[in-house]
Image (cartoon, rainbow, N blue to C red):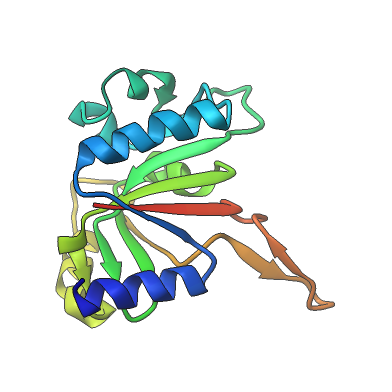
Length: 175
């Protein structure tokens, strides 16, 4: 295995993420079907690029692009990362607005697809792409999400809490 990929996996796991590796997208789709069945997940959020890709067939029909107005709890979000950063095990996503960012941040569990070919050594390697994305005028609020492991915070008493400001579980589907 490529040392860049090994380093990404090692750092992502150290940050609390789970990493599942697949040879192709069909293996990942099969994993998702089993995951949803075993965890009794019937609804969730999906990023618009994955929804329109058709990669997950009927599985994606159970996912919405935005939460319903009366939704208080979202079990799972399914999104694809634009890059992975080996140095830190970080996922990078070029969001075009809040709806895309919600898929990363609102659900209890975030399932993120990442192609091995999109893993870079460090943020410096994609700095021009980040700058280019943020300079886009097409979107009213282009954003860059950097996700390293499940959400965590510590209060004044230094009590670590997982999942307060984002998913308590991050599963990276490495293809």
